[in-house]
Amino acid sequence: MALDSYVIEWDYDPSFVHSSSPLASCTTYRYGSCVQSGDAIAITPPYQYIIQRLNTSEVYYVRVTARNQISLIVKATSDAEAYKWSGTEFAAPRNQAPSPPISVDLILSGKSDLQVLVGVPVSDGGKPITHYLFEWISADDYGNRSVPVNNLDVLRVGVYVYGISNLQTGSSYIVRVSAKNSMGYSVYTASPSSINIAESQRSHPLSLFLQPRPRILLLLPLKFHGRHLLAVLLMEDHLSFNT
Figure: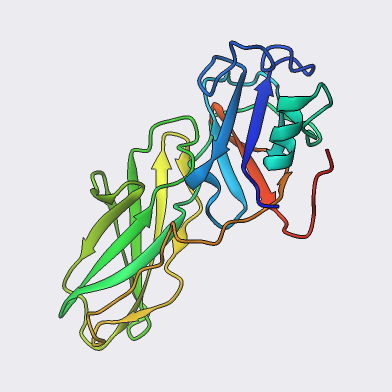
């Protein structure tokens, strides 16, 4: 049976007494409960969810449960335990460098020009991102160029675009991008392959949204991202939760 939604809870109390209360929401301070469904789970796992409004260095506890139609019926018609919670993970957030850009794709935009599509990092590390560093290298001259960029044009939600001009016709280029805040640079993300300036200008960037719907939810260890915790969720279609 297909996954209907999942619920993620977090709390500074390991008993989850606050996150289980009616006051808990996706935006309550230091604790919360949030349901993810629809487009949020209609992508290829692992899933990522950023928990916000936390205190730096305070320990937080996180758990996740998956829902399908059977568990929803059980909850509505009986007093039995409808959901099976994952094991509890815990971590204390801290400020750090941003996470890497989630993608870097290249499109030919002229005889000697490229457009670079950059997927926004999942986390800013707890400090605002000040700029992105673009680096490109040609396989022909073995030299690389780099430039910091403070303001990027927005192509669509979650994707920036930057133009590189005056490239050598007939050469192949690879581009990599990193994000920076006051704590330092992220690990860079490179384009998945090189692109030749002499090729046809028609290009098909990778889709970030059209992916098959997964089924079952598991919680992996938490990662630090500034004042936030990143809960990484993995789906396996050969497992199931019994209710």
